[in-house]
Amino acid sequence: MFKFVRRAGWFLLILFLPLVLFADDQAWQVAKSTHFNIFYKNASENALNELMQKAEEGYDSIAEELGFNRFNFWTWDNRAKIYLFDNQEDYIKATQGFDWSAGQVSVGDKLIQSYVGAPGFLQNIFPHELAHIIFMEKVGFNNPAVPLWLQEGVATYQEKDIHLRREELADKIKQDSYFDLSALSRFELKSSSGESVRLFYAEAYSLVNYLIAEFGKEAFVMFCRNLRDSRNLESALAKTYSFISLKDFEESWKRYILE
Image (cartoon, rainbow, N blue to C red; front, top):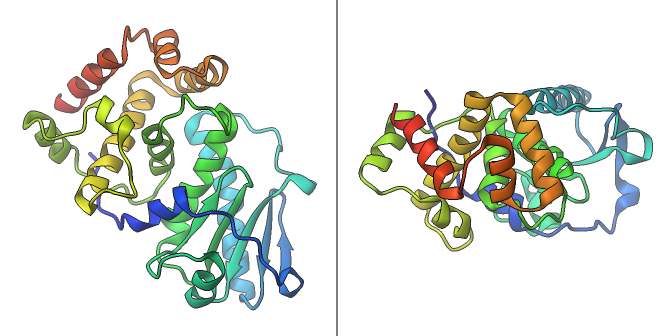
């Protein structure tokens, strides 16, 4: 059973805010771990240690959850970067974000930004954003065949507080008030209401969870490889799972939820 309830704005930032380059880089201190450089100004040692521990745990656990093997890709000069601002005011000012933002990611730059004490950052936002990077690294950062729902489904799969109850989603399907796969693939977060965004993330998570729960991690890894190589979603699904079409995939997922 799963449930889904969340503040939609966090996701908009993850996808749509640009990378901001900081003019005062000299003011930043840096703490280094095996796979991360954490840039900070006045964060406490405890805050840095906690973030560093979560970052390294996330690097290993997310890859394990998805079935991806890691071979120390993010070491030395190739470490991922985390900018940890002192407070939300500084973070919003520097990143030009909204006042409800708690974190954002620039996937291609392997850069995550947040601030000390951001609500839900270590438990949900950081794993979500880190999963974005690891997944897109696997399938190709500029792969046009990767729909938004798949990116967000993989990222949401890593969160510690998954929030939409399966029965609720089943009711949506029975009432024909869900997004079919075609609508899900056309969905635009920026122009959508909170309830629509909530349903979008619920379905995105559920579709990814279905593939992994029903067919296993090894098949999901193969699916990602096929998606990377073919750069075609329908082809990758057919080659990996033998779905004859995207509609066939959708109907199989619906049966899984309704059971």
